[in-house]
Amino acid sequence: MALLSIVVPCFNEEDMIPLFYAEINSLILNELNRYDFELIFVDDGSIDTTLNIIKDLSSKNKNIKFISFSRNFGKESAIYAGLQHSKGDYIVLMDVDLQDPPSLLPTMILNLESEEYDSVGCKRSSRKGEPFFRTLSSKMFYYIINKLSKTEIIHGARDYRIFKRKMVDSILSVSEYNRFSKGIFQWVGFKTKWLDYENIERAKGGSKWSFWQLFKYSLEGIEAFSTSLLSISTFAGIISSILAFIFIIVIVIQKLFFDNAVAGWASTISIILLIGGIQLFSIGILGQYISKTYLETKNRPIYITKEDNFDE
Image 1: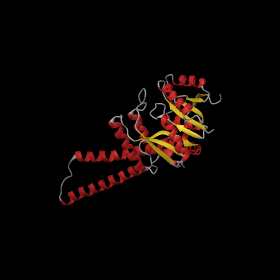
Image 2: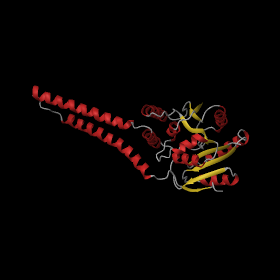
Image 3: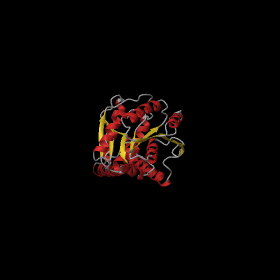
């Protein structure tokens, strides 16, 4: 039988793990019983009882594996670790909060097996139930990144996907430290089919992502898959130089032909602040790219494992 690996990143999900396991186990026993399976929980440095609950489940079911990080390295690292440890012919990536409905999994597998696709992904057809500002911010992010990047990032795409082994091996070959998985999944290519579904609220608890964290994550995605921001800063510098040159010509003409003294400290200071602001903005963009390069050259590990049960 084909081996199905299910990779589940977790961070402080003590309330959700029992609910998730009940649903996924029922699905495996009833609708997916033609597959061997391994369920891989990746504990991303949780500070609650998440790891203890996972250990308890693994002691009762030998097909449950876990990796526990030495600290919180972030979801991107957890995704990489789970994919790296998976052995399946088909590999599923899904969240533990049940916003990725397990009921879609049989359809996803059927599409992967019956058609010429290398992966099947899920995307939300709406963001019903989310705050308006968060929905608007999401739309703006996808619009901006797709304008700046040559790699198309699918609007509304979730991390909920199933891959064939060959595609996962390609994803793992992209071993960069600063990771943006949605972009990497698209960048490696292969054929992907998308399934739409309505937004589902978390069964328990709240999102672990604050607006600020999502904002930083968005910037990392844009920086990882586009160098257009550097071009924008260059363009801004050119425009400001042209405007400054025009302003100088205007001042000279006023003095030579109209004998007008150049007045207005306010306008002078405003121009200085404008030029200075553009320069600092451009330096800031450059600094972001340099910092990413700096982190890559350190060649630090993407994650550090504190304990796991893969040798048991």
